[in-house]
Length: 265
Image (cartoon, rainbow, N blue to C red; front, side, top):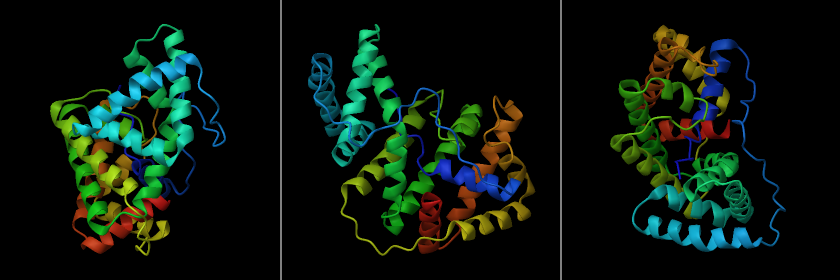
């Protein structure tokens, strides 16, 4: 099963970048094929779904115990939002009935619950400690630097919340670190009281960054462009890297408050 975590806060960051660059903010569409979840959808499993539950969930648990944090992230979501396990299994079972392999079925199930995973991860960032929020920003910067050198189109994809097309051992390592931070936040009690910078203030800060670094502002205008050229994708890489580099220069508490503000949107 592929990674479906998809950089929860980048969706909102890219919307903020577009607002600053273009003067308006519009909701980003969910990728094709993603199901919308009904919080009341917790009916009894069919035989196919029960079979998949018996097969896949123990594999998730084993993978999580062995340090594969994507699996741990799904398990954390299933505990937090039980209806997601139902939708995951229903979608995977349907894919199996249509001839998909277990891996393909797992991917379909993951895609179906991706919007809720992003939603809950956004909420989680609001209760992240300063260090957790800062660590997440640092990992994200490293991911975009990796895309810049190996697959510039993946900068464009991840900037709107889609999975990267290519992978590498280095990227897998970074995504595992990203998921580990998110799992820690999801599994921790809400301590409350953390500072959240209003999105308007985050956008003002971004505007200042773009005035100092105009090339980053240019790249922001390409975010969401259908089928961007490699040149446009590279510009998006520059935009995202610039934003996270500038975040890294802020004092820890302010950096974390900005990350929370991006998630609050």
